[in-house]
Length: 78
Image (cartoon, rainbow, N blue to C red; front, side):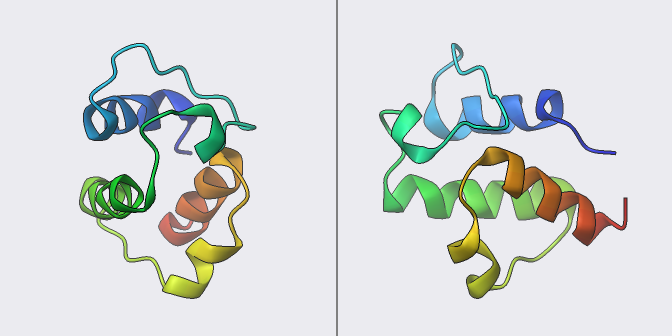
């Protein structure tokens, strides 16, 4: 099962911030650089890292990193 420790390096690289510590409750409001452009970069980085594809509708429903993690695990069948 994929966990937050696997997501943190991806977030740190996309946002160019080694201090990011993810929690399930983390939202875009918690990361200063998280805007629409970096969100798209994050989506692409996650898709490449986990070899999955997100549908636009799936991403719009996500409220926090925990829900993103749950979606990744569902896509991976874990």
